[in-house]
Length: 254
Length: 76
Image (cartoon, rainbow over all chains, first blue to last red; front, side):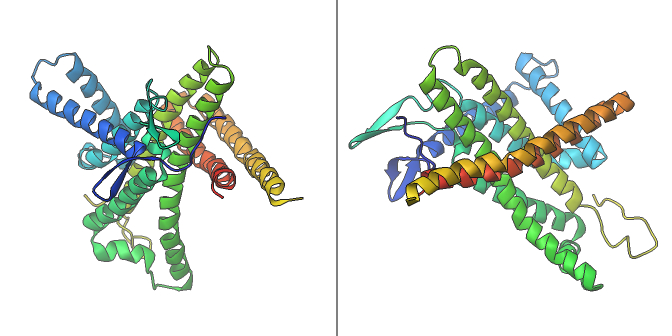
């Protein structure tokens, strides 16, 4: 029977720090993205080549989609690095996890063998780290836009008993966001890996093909969802509150 | 009934019962989205974005059930 392990297996140690197969593949994704970014930056020109055109298309699409949530192009450009980086990193992680060799190239460790590479998001550590970064940055960016007092007044609101209760709920909901972000991505990718492994185990030829397509699609959708949700939370965090208790309309802080 | 049998049944029940309502929810969201696009084709891209977001939220609940099933099966 095939071995399916919930936790990423350790391949080797650097000093006393264990390196798992998910960390290995996520480092490869990181290096790939960095090299891609560097090469694109070097070859930027007024008359774009093919790679630059493709990325200009993607950026324009991403900025337009962010415009529909944030309202204007200036704010979109301000928050593009966070949202698009999360999207690209998760997308490349998920798609690299489908390449041949991931999961099949094994390393011998004592009596049993362990895959050398594993989809990064199938490790809860990866998704939890991304979720923590996203939610922490949403709070920091919200504080940067409307001030620390403005951000804290969402959680600690002493204008009345109901507002206080809502503030407590908002605080709990921040932690719920962390859990929801991490488990959504982890569940989707890990379940996809298990599904592919079992399909390949049952019928090795032809039948895994539609499931590979499903995983390509799911990988894209989950990356999109992660980025989009981060964007929506940032959009909610930078809106200036306090307008409901006074006469003037609430407005978005830049 | 020993613990191993109960664990197997619990694993199957967790994922089986946990995905009924999210599946219904995703179906409802999809049908409302299609209705909305039918009424107002110009708002199609905004409705589509909203629908995909809502579907991801609904799916996350099914994923929670899946995670419970996975923990039951693979972690002690």
